[in-house]
Length: 523
Image 1 (tube, one colour):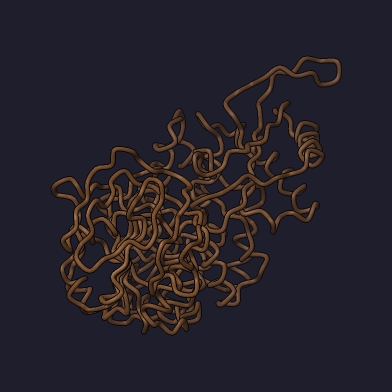
Image 2 (cartoon, helix red, strand yellow):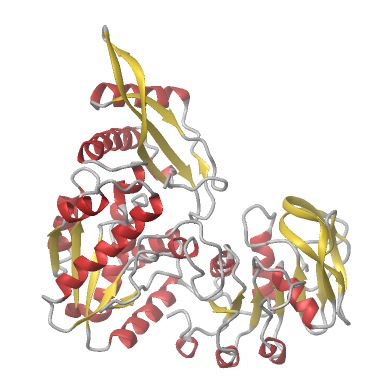
């Protein structure tokens, strides 16, 4: 769906992806401004650039060095279209290099927050960043532009980047060394909006309604008269995907709910009641817990857990597909953060952080083709799409739950006893959060059962039991996150409840690590 330019929206801004971990954030910021975007990998087909007829082009950041041979460059078609161009970080560097400037390795690197000094006005800054003012921006670079191409001038600097922002107003070419797409850059979203709405003159009329329409068209075009089985977990992602696909193809969809033995308390019953009953979508309930837990026996490495679970999912789906005559497609609720932490979503070379079970676990040879209508969206965008589809707020507002389930919340080897302990602790924790009226303020909250035992005193007896870690974060998109600032009284209350109500835990700790440097999940 992501490359279906011919059926795309008007006022398209095309993003060329050079493998940055945050390329999709650029698209996100533009969507927030009502501007439709597509991402094309820097290794893709350059003919698609011309076919897309974009109003403007953004060159993303990336992990490579322009100063090195055989690193990616922008297609010549980018510069042949006579449309505005914005180069970000690596995008700025390759644009300058290709247009006659010079990039060299830096003697000092610049990472993190930096102060941008705005020296001159330009069309990109108009009405937003006046000359003489400063802004806090986010830098992440080692190389730097050393010589500008003809026609460019410096419009902003930082201590580590003498060409922090450059402009050629005549050709409407702009380059910034910093990353306006991340939340750490002051007014960064407004700057991207200014590029799309002001420089590219887009209308800003794109909406989730338009995305829904386009997604349905793309599903119908991909599936035709084939049948689809959808991996349903009951979480927001798979639920929205299922309802969207059902709206597109109706009875051609059958949902398959696999109980892998790694779900939270009472979750299986809730899924069956909701989809088999309320939504009346054809549903197959497969209890495969013994299969999954048997495959995971003795496995402690988190990457292996994810890949085993992913491969096992596919095995089960293929077994069920044989029972559905004509089943040719497997639908998943894969989101962009799932993908970008595994591979670049559209072909760049983003660095692997962890494999999502839906991505890293897929075998090379699979009998079913994938349908993933949400893979370009962030979690909050999926929630908006769910509301657009009429899903109840009780479902749309649910915290994210990982596809591998509790397997990645039990570091180390997994046992049935550990899972039972964790289910109980997690239920107590979420119950306390809901009763305190904090559930909707938190992006994700869960308990983790640590592979550590400590000595405790319970009554007059010595105990030697597990440690439970609690995690709660705030986030807008899952790419970055901060720990939720619970009060000490609340944490004490929860810890007391868990220790008293859950046999097997005698100590509770709270994780205050942000993302980065940590991840939201522990594994």
